[in-house]
Image 1 (tube, helix red, strand yellow):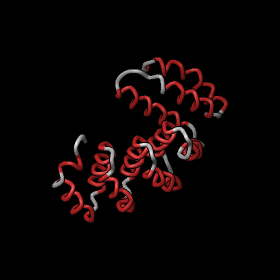
Image 2 (tube, rainbow, N blue to C red):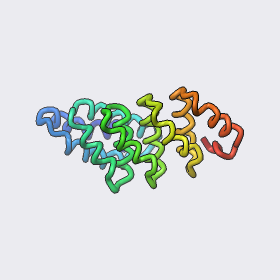
Image 3 (cartoon, rainbow, N blue to C red):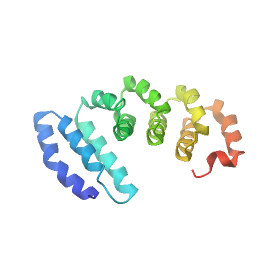
Length: 171
């Protein structure tokens, strides 16, 4: 399945969801369909963007994503982080912070990026340890997020990381 097929599959369900104001079946269909997207990473990124648009139509989406953030399925947790980054309210912050210690590296990376997109530099202390994460993508996301926050406290830490080439290998 490619992105065009995903959009085509979800179009009738989106119309029903808007009419009935019940987006739960649409979310479930989306999750099942995106797992089948074969192709470029760009398609998956666009698919996540599509979910954000869907969620923007549903004011009750944030509570659903908060539930997903604790689901046993790492894909649901990752998706929740990406959606909460875009439309999450202040109450979702704690749910994102918890995911910084998720066993799945994709979820940790999404959580770091979610915090970075919020521009809240009070999370610097929670992000700093991820600059030495075992996964290079999580490390890269942590460094990028810290740079984005422009917090003078982390400047020395970023300089130390830059001096250790092994820390950022693969980013």
